Structure formats: C-alpha cells, structure tokens
Image 1 (tube, rainbow, N blue to C red):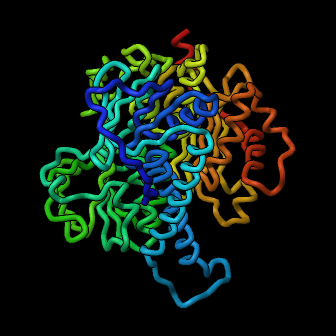
Image 2 (image 1 turned 45 degrees about the vertical axis):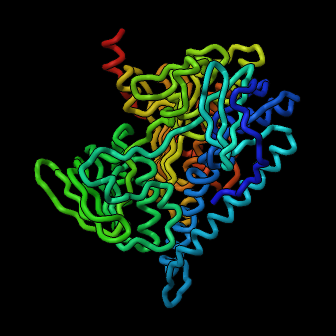
Image 3 (image 1 turned 180 degrees about the horizontal axis):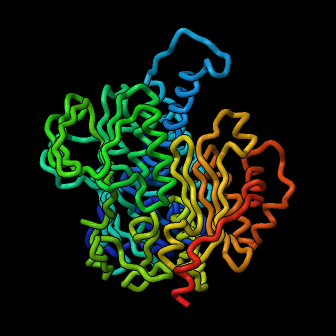
Length: 487
C-alpha cells in the first residue's frame, strides 16, 4: 500500500504554454527516482510524473515487498522444522493478514522516506497520469481532473513493465493473481496453481508452500530456469519436490475455467497428454509487457521495437532528440540494479560524458531458499561461445559456515579462463548465494586473479570463506575441443 500524496489543485493549462523544466521524467522507477534527486540536487528544475507508486514498482509491489513476504515464509519454515534445532512446540498457524501488514508497514516507511528525499532535494513529484503531447512535452492529468503541461530540456521515459496475461482461453476471465495481488493476499491459498516457472513463479510458489498452500507449478519448458546450466535447474527441481511442490514441465496451458480465489480448473498438455488440475487460486507469472501503449510516444517521435519496448542506443537515447529511456521499458535486463546503472548512464551523458550500457556486468539472484545467483558466464554460455575454461566446483557441504547453519544444499562453481587466472563467471545455488556472489564480482571488477580469493584471509566461519576451498579444489578443463575447432 503506497502513501497517499496531497496534490494541490491546479488550474487547467490547456491552451497555455507548458511549464519549462530542465528535466521531466515520465514514470517514477528506481533509476528515474535517483536521476531526479541527483539533478534536483544540482539545482536543476526537475519534475517526476507518476500515476500510482512513489518510487515505482520496486519498493511498492515488486522486489522489496516480495522479499519481505519471502522472509516471513522462511521464518515459517524455521518454525516448522524447529525440532531439528532442539526447539519443540505444539504446532503453529499462519495469519496472512499479519504477514501482509508487516509488508505494508515496510512499504509505508519506504514511501515516507522517498517523499522526504524529494522534499530535501527539491525535485517535484506529481501524482498524475502522464502522456506526451508533442516533442519533449508531457501532459499530466491530476487526480482532481486538472491538467498540467510540462516541457523539459530533456525528458526521460521510465514507465516500466507489467505482468503479461497470455491469450489462453478462459485465463483473463478467471481473474488470475499476478505478483501484485499475490503480495496482498489476506489468506493462505488452499491450492495455488502457478503458471510460469520464472523468477516470480518460483519465489512465490515456494513462499506459499511454506505458508501451507498446496502448490502446483506449470512450466512450458523442459527445465526450470531453462536458460541456466542443468545443475542449477536440477537443484531447483529437487528443492521444490522435497518441499512438496508439484511440478509439471514441458507443459502447455490449454484452457482455464472458474475464478481465482474460489475454484479454478486448468487443462494442460504435457508430452502430448492432456491433464486437468484443480485449485483455489491461479497465479500468472509468464513474463512482462512494456508500458508503452497510450502514452503518446509517437507524438514525441519516440519509436518502439517489435516487442513494444522503447528503442534506444547504447547511450539510452531514444529516436527523439532530448528524450531518453531507462529501466525495463527500454529493454534493459529486468533488475532494479540495472535500472540504477541506467540512471548513471543517462546522468553522465546529460553531463557531457559518453557512458554506454554495452559490456557491463549483469549480476542477478533468484531469492528462493537457498538462493540461486550468477555473474558472468555460465557453462552453457561458455560452450555456446566456444570459450575454454577451467571449472571449479564444490558442494556447500564443504563450506563450514553452511554446516553450522544446517543449510548445506547446493553448490558453488566458478569458470576461470583456461590460459590465464581471470575469473569468467561465478554461480551459486546456496544459502546466501547473492552475498557470496558479490564478493566474487568485486574481484572480477578489480581484475583480480582467482588466486587472490583462494589465498585471501577471510573471516572464519563465514559463507564467503567458502570461496577459498572452492578455488583450492582441483579444476577440470572444459570446452577445449570447441575452442580448438574455432582456432
């Protein structure tokens, strides 16, 4: 739940000259928020037009709220398994209204913090529906129906994406949950049917299972996270099966009937055989669509790609002079940290630099428990590119801190260039995988050889300390034949 913003009534400005700004931003995503604060802090006149969420989706309906809910689910898992730690009890129950309340409280605090920074920096936050009406000119329709017109010396489009609802017969009529509604549930679903085995589907499937739902996951591909290495896919599949989540791989959703929240029936086709699933709720997590329709991009001279994303170059310039785009709507990788980096790219270029998006690292983390995190090349990518490498791989049982926690599921692995000591990539399916990955990423940024991590004096016992035994293990040579053929 986002903070309500008091918006002062404004006279209709139709037919009048637009208000002039140094920078106008359409959409208050994380990257655009930081950009607004930065330039307003430099005493430029900045306005951000946002229709609903202060700070965009990340602090309101996506990254942070979902991790809040996921942590509550982890606590539930700890309580359920408390006997392992010598703690006994007579059972417990889940009050989803309290879980939801904890999440809402966090969101409220974030909204208040964001608005405080807006006031301190002098950036103007306008709660309104915005659309282009001409080159570098945006019309904002406020909640009271009044209209403002703003023209910027530069304009940034940061309208993000939304959940895609595939044209499956009966799906839209079933009023399915997306991640937005799933994070607002006030009760534990009796049986949650999840369509889509991507990040959102996997994270919420595990969380709801830990709250007590029966969960069935439908994935159209032959593997979970099918773009990743097979050991990652198999690790996640084993995890979900062990937690009692029903998985249907290579399954196409044919039709849906009923209504989510009451009774839902889904017909799938798996390996040529039709199957019928019944549940109480259905969650759709099959991808994202850019928010580019109906915002007048054509009137501003801003072109979109075949998939509807804003067309940008490596400097994040659109096809219209003085108009930029950042974050998911620009087709950037769909991570908040990439939106933040996009903001740096545009900031530097507006200040006369030549910052580009090409060649940057794109780390990511799937916040299941344990987590899956990766930066740099996977084995699958190295093979596809014909890159020879040394593979270092260790089970989490070799990490002593993981043993103290009783969380030894998973592994660490790293790819090192075959004829040098340069780290090409790192993958972790492990407790604290995201944090451990960051340690390796910093070494990669600094250009350190893998031996620097191998020989580093790291605090004992910590999860990052597991990097020393990883890089001390005996590597195996991979992809030599492919490389020789290319040469």
